[in-house]
Image (tube, rainbow, N blue to C red):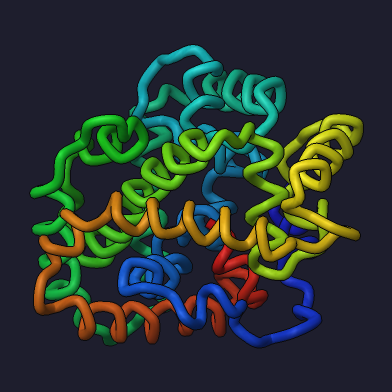
Length: 300
């Protein structure tokens, strides 16, 4: 999948521009997560970053998989698939194998870091981002990394010198911290990867398969997951039931709880930080450097 194809698929006007209900009434941890999502994902959606990676032979998806997983080092694709959680393992294997053949991982990390910092500087021209980066770095430095492979691997990378690079890296660390905690909460709730995706997408208002279908699972596996969710009373006629919403709300609460130490590290700055990050993320969306659909922003 090249970058233009990804943009065509994910940047379509949403059918409903309202923020999904579970997100609109979300906790401080959820509000922080959604406020920073477009900044944290700038390396994935920036046209400049994608052009730089394409110059080395990466397409959109191999750049995403290899770039995000590169801090893990030279690990088997099964490790990457287990850390990502919701993607089909054979798809991850293909993208990881292809991406590793293009550049040594340290070189890929350097290209991605430099281009993301430069791109974010272009989008947030004139903003003083250093103070927010300081607060988030303080928070992510203080938390324990147990059971958080993507977060811990990323945190082990050298700190970036550019203030816009520091902002991006700090938001990405918060995102990976929450993502690792969310995956653990889903596993503890007894969900396999496909049912995780279907329950999450219906929770934020997607039809079954519209978002989870981008994760590479065969249609038969997706159909079986939806059937299992219906048999368990979590879906009915393609929509999440009250029982399903209660389960997904409980997963959300467990995910939020897993971030408590990080929020304590942010401390009294949380409201200001969230407000500023939201404004900067809106600029990313306006610059067409992140999809405009609020369901996409909330899907995590």
